[in-house]
Image (cartoon, rainbow, N blue to C red; front, side, top):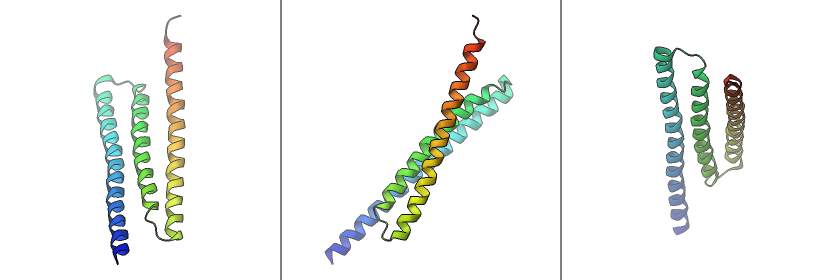
Length: 126
């Protein structure tokens, strides 16, 4: 009986932790979207330079990557309490998708950063 209560307590605790970590990820992604949108509006209204959009995309990409890391952390925590192989398989599939998204997002951010740096060097007087 005590083992069942302890197991249920651990499941409840991990479930709360998963919700907190996933909420943190959602908040990071939302904050990034709000910041990017505000910067977009400012550039459209004040600067009117399309080249500035690349910097916004890079910053938003960083927020997305960080948010996905939190989501993946929630998935990993959830595997600690997944009672069946079917649930573990579903979590593994979700984790694989999130990991792939994060990988490709990180690669795109790196390529964009290199392109911005290259353009900046080419624009400098010799």
